Amino acid sequence: MKLDMQPTPPQLPESTSIRDRVFCAIADQKVEPRPCYVFWCQNSAMWLIWLLTVLLGALATAVLLFTSTYRYYDIYEAMHDNFVTFFLQALPLLWIVAFVVLMLVAMRGLRATRRGYRLSPVLVGGSSVGVSVLLGLLASTLGFGFVVDRALGEHAPMYRSLAEQEQQMWQQPDEGRLVGQAAGVETREQMTVQFVDSAGVAWNLDIQELRPQDHLLLESAQRVRVLGMQLEGEVPRFHACGVFPWMADQNRPRKVLSAGRQESVDKMYAHSYTPADRLAEFEQLAFADARADNVPSMKICASIAAVKRITEQMQ
Image (tube, rainbow, N blue to C red; front, side, top):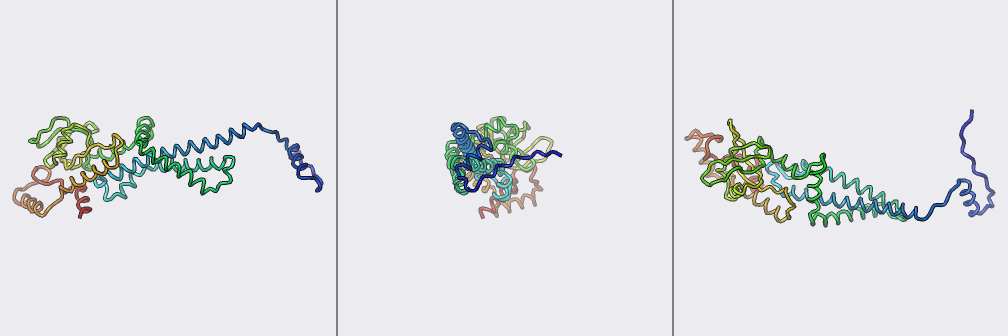
């Protein structure tokens, strides 16, 4: 039976010099010299890979900062008991995974450069992450986080942008949330106004408990978010408790987001019960045979979950 065997290297005398041993090994293994530009290209390619991964990591950081900042100033009380559970549900896992993978590739690329093997993994990893984060902060300040998020939402079928996620979370009539715009001109004497949501459904929007700034938003006919309660009936009816501007259409400064959240919280807290409100409701229920779904004078907004959560936090 014939077996393929590797040739055995010749046995050299112990007195043979290191120089002769090296030349003998080169001749025996048939090592051929390569031009220096080959090594230069390989080294440059490794640096290019590191640079590209760091730049992509910076863009991932910018998008993370954009989405996280928006979430932090969102009206999370409309959907969750606290910010932690809300943020965990809306956590941008895709960008976190992308950032980690890109940093691992950047570390490997830098270690593969000409003198990269001499650097410690901690230094390589720290420098890659540090450069990406610093560039990401700069890119986020310049608005690249919003631009990348919107571009991917428009051109990547499997990617959901922040605006798409916001619409999905707010277009939930059964849970007391709508996204859309007023269909007609509102007057202060009206009890209801026509409102068309993002799904194309026309609602009779009860506006009796809205604040003056809510009326102004509806009158502007811009895209808004509405928080309240869906009412029973053959015709779609919705009792509005708060109207909030649609904030996911552009990159807004942190001050604007913070001011918008504070205004929204104050607006919803104004619906909370006072002892006088409880007494008036008790009298209405006791003597007027009233029901919350058909009597306009009832304070429906004080009973919705978002107002209760905000009230508990404020107290």
